[in-house]
Length: 309
Image 1 (spheres, rainbow, N blue to C red):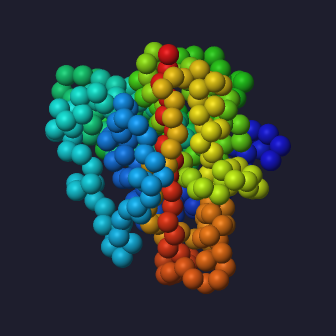
Image 2 (cartoon, rainbow, N blue to C red):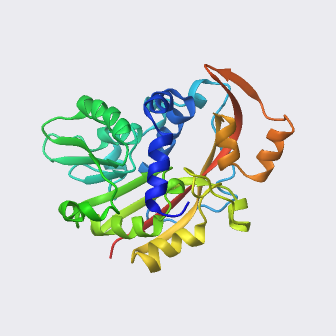
């Protein structure tokens, strides 16, 4: 791809209305948001990051619906969460941005932890895709009340024509999260630098994305919509968050692994060489799911974190 706009156009073409509907029905896309929120809410900002050995266990039982995950069983109890996690930035009164929010499947799961009868909270979603944001607003209608606002904006934050409009978000958010979107972004260095301007002093940026060890060893080719095939590099993320964008307390590490059922396109654009070879040799478990064949693969997720000075 030659520039940021080409990548935006490619993603808008890929994530059309038909794919948006299928996206929200796919089991993998319902499993991952629960894991994302589980690990974000339980993330210890003061503890050392997990080593590869510590994050090597593959979570979930792929023979159970949604890996055996449920919101009630696997996410913290919102009623006791703050007392058990007093230092969390995910709390009532916070203003949180879900950047590249898609249909709001992650955003919606954060809502119960911001609910309060006394403090006003905001959950803002930003995305380039109006089709996804239509679903986001449908989810928002279910959670909005007098003290919690969940609202979306259709923005390409690098678009020169809207920079004056974006000034309303400068130094505004306590937390910004972005889940499995950075590998689609052509110029994520400049996107990160812009997101940092949206953070309040001491606010936190969390980037969650696909990861595998192969990408640390070589540069994988990109395609139109998946710019960083295989995932993102830890050293590059640390540089972009730290030296390039000015954040402190920066770290990047594989946070967890889990099983997902996904299609050939995902495997070819996201998975490591070992899985690709197993796929080509017909060694992966497969199943029919509606109009596609899915294969069972282990995916790794990286969490990159930084705090504004």
